[in-house]
Length: 223
Ligand code: CA
Image (cartoon, rainbow, N blue to C red; front, side, top):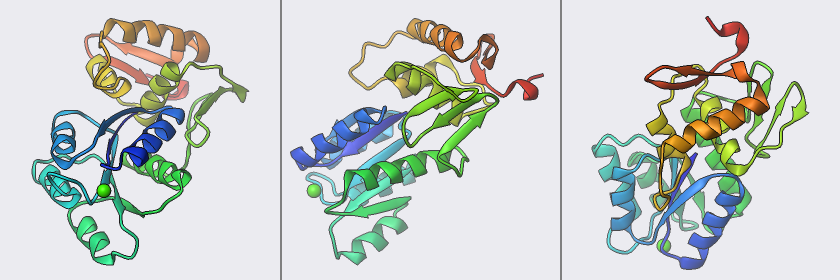
């Protein structure tokens, strides 16, 4: 899962980025509205954290431009406390949720988890696929109740596939959602990680759909 943080307060930006990385997300960051708008328009994000008060372009305008351009990713707005008019304007502009400053990082993380889950059509923080269980709250996974030891990269791969359970996910999509913008991307490494993940969760869990990509689904649902 890949997240964009747009926040001009350098300290707050760093705290958000670190907390998100700690929780297993890959994160891109921007410090003004123009840079943030550009990234959100050109890169695929699973969720965006967007401050309202930004230099160059304010957050509401950034959001309006994204929505007008058909960008549908979930957006969590950071609003000033007591500015109820900001919250109304933000929701009208297409925000999915907001958090008022000052906030606890845990609350932001919980709201981001919920936005990503709901965008993928899951209501609960645990996603189950046959014997595989993903706990998005603790960023842990298990097979048949046995905890899995996954690297952060393997967790991200499993998490993305589980959120898109039953769908064919292309290599390009995986590369775009598992690496940040600065990473030297090589889609061949995806195959290596899929191979490692298969060894841990069971060879049959992840199907290769020739020429299209990968699909995770519960064994009894497989054709
Ligand atoms: Ca600000």
